[in-house]
Image 1 (cartoon, helix red, strand yellow):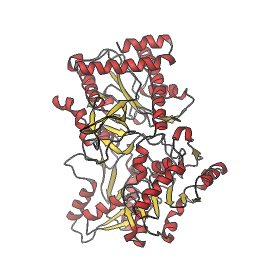
Image 2 (cartoon, one colour):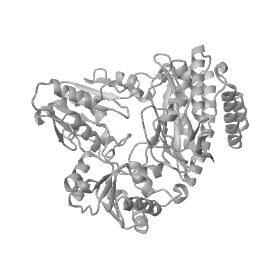
Image 3 (cartoon, one colour):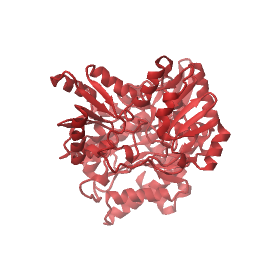
Amino acid sequence: MRYSLEALQTYMKRWGWDIAVVSGSDPHGSEYTPQRWRLREFITGFTGSAGTVVVTQNSSGLWTDSRYFLQAEQQLANSGSVLHKEKPGNQTWSEWIAEYCATQGKEHVVIGVDGMCHSYSQIDELKRSCPNATIVSSPDYIDPIWTDRPALPKDKVWILGIEYAGTGAAEKLSALRKVMARNGCSAALISDLMQIAWLLNIRSNDVLHTPVVISYCLVEQDRVVLFADPDKFSTDILDYFGKTDNFELHSYYGISDYLKEYNVGDGIMLHSKTLNYHLYSILQSKCPDRIVDMEMPVNMAKAAKNPTEISGFRQAYLFDGIAQTRFFKWLEESVSNGKKVSEADAAAKMSSLRALNPQYIDDSFGTISAYGANGAYPHYDYSVAKKETYLEPHGLYLIDSGAHYRCGTTDITRTVPLGELTDQERFDYTIVLKSMIGLSMAVFPEHTAGARLDCLMREPMWRCRLNYGHGSGHGVGHLLSVHEGPQGIRQDSNPAEFVPGVVMSNEPGIYIEGKHGVRHENMLLCVEDCRNEYGTWFRFDTITRTYIDTTCLACGILSQEELAWIRDFNRICIEELSPYLEQSEIEWLLTKTK
């Protein structure tokens, strides 16, 4: 990877660039991207899912968040790039560039970006930070360096049936058009891949573990124009769209030229935080006074799951509960009997058990399978570890995994004992569970955003002067991305309010470098609790159905109410799973939850 960095710096001198910014995202602002747009990894060797690289003619730096600090330090060693930690009080990458520009003693600094792979808001912030710099947008500037750059995926598009989606594309389009009309817009340009997939009920395999279709969608009051690879659409799919709406299919790479000639009409709805800089700039040069910049209503509609989707989620977590009970029984017996089981072996076993279900489509993300000290890496990736790690009959094992079933998507983390534990391991296991229960039992008023709930999870840890750097909860899409907005539970401000139907993870953690990591994760469904003279009240319904191991609890730090919650949760799991388990599996499950 060092060669890629040096090659970029060579081209920068040829182009007259003082700085190049590498986003690591794609033209749709995706967290998980096709191989074609993994520029961050190509330049630095860093494989995490988040981060921005800033390259000067003689240096390189990666900005990423706390999930990847340890991983980045390892992967950047000898790469020519240094780690900049994204945390409160530290410089952002755009602030660093501004300082660099100010100290260069040059009258003019040129900053090169791939305008297709940065949102308009990102580049606008960079312009404000560096008002005297010239920013050059050069889409696909990496091509001369990445000579064997992967092409777009060719997997066929398929339709998610109404029996799983619950609402048809025609109904969803009608709801969007009503919002467009209220905002005086003739059209809406959607670039977020999850929003497009949900709106049109289409799926494919264009991104690893994320069944979306690489595309842009232009919605008008009487027409839908989709920009995608036409070869991915069968005649049956085109017939489906013809019956749903007035539908046109154009080449994916033709959108720039199309927008240059496009008649915006009364106005066009778009979102500068998701639409890339290149396309936004085309429209801004044509009709700046007819752009309505707002969050797409599709985003909130997608997050509030309908009854069919909710039913599907519940079924998916029942499927997971069955597979994971069998997995943990197999794991405990294998390790205690001296069988060699690596982290990779355990991850493969988990996937294979899920795949036995006829509704299984794919894992929903790469499994985090971490034993002992490796658990201290929140997003540990055994596939890029320096050496293979085998599980031993002592200490803690953490597995964060999930699946896409036709009925829904799962994400669950369990940390389990593999034998004898230290007092510290027991304490950490229990305090993290105590934090998870804090959110599970929350009752809160309507119009509450996630930042207000975050402290309910962290408070037990804060009392012990403990904390974790990642968010406490993220939304999960219905057969879409395992990370979904707009709602989230984290300390930084996010105005998106919780509404009934939102499915949200609940995942506090502790990470002790060189020793172990603990994370417990359940999935929560926001539901209405009651209405009274003080307003409307919401609460969470835990829909995960994988047991919590009680054999390693430090019970003294749990209240009677918290112990009762654990007993009730495990009772529900046993009752719902037992009809699908063998008697030996039920008996084993009872020993883990007594």
